Length: 428
Image (cartoon, rainbow, N blue to C red; front, side, top):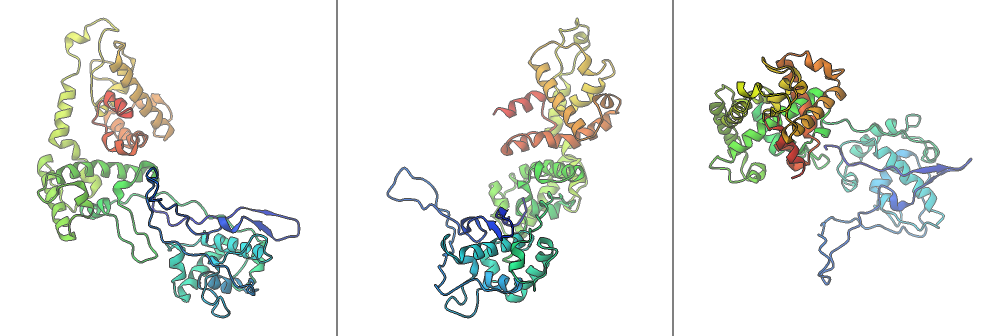
């Protein structure tokens, strides 16, 4: 999610005792962005205009050739151009020469080397902004990235030595580690992210846009899941605030002072409603434990509890009892351990109807995730756990199940929902 510009490295095929044969300049990093403009005369063409600024490619003068310089000088020429000659000041990355030109192989080889170095560089948003950097900053970027791309070469080596030296492929970016923050600190990050620190930084996108696959490690994913549940509740409360008319207002519709005041007042409302003492300085993960104490949640749990079997229902012949319609959180320990009067619900001969079918489906999916994520080695371990331990496992694995829904439905997939709702949600 938060990765910087990905710089493609052209593929190459080496020939015996020859320079590396590279992809065409069209696929090189400095190729311009092609925009298909909307034809105003064609009413059937409704493609939107992107508004992207295109850098014009330049055909170098007939007398120009790729100079034999070291990597440092070529790096400067690539982004700042050479200060001498008829093409003075034009970055080499904008030069375009015909494929059949004798200058093409060398220029294309330089393009490949620059791409390989940039693949290891950090802290830039676009090639245009790189060209605007002062020389000292540009040189510093090269000196940091070059050892990662070409560990056996240095910046003062002739550029032609790089043509036949294969670069190191950069490691894939690590998934995002979700932070453990107070509600006040998370309030801004959740809805607004952080602005770029400079023109060469992209900042952090709003954390509400994260998906489960964007977050690394089980602990990080659990923090994200609990914070997500907390902020779903806080968002609902915020929409009742007189200063908030829509969710968009939380994103960019109010000044920072009002935004912070709304946060404090919403958290105060949440604390009053849940009967707890949390405030804006409370960690999100700690406050999330009180979401289940909200009236709406309690009502749903009470309603679920009222649908448990009566003594008369328990006395019915096997295969005629209907499985209770409970929340997923309530059903999970009952499914594996049962209650005081029944063995594990998964072993009871229930009436074969839709209620049983959807319950089995959701419980099977969660059990499979528990095993695949190594919460347990096999299903039998779940049967020996206490109800509290089973709920801890559920809190860890449910985010994985929720991440399998469409992005716009993930917020609705929560453990307090019944199994039939979770199944229906897939097909909405």
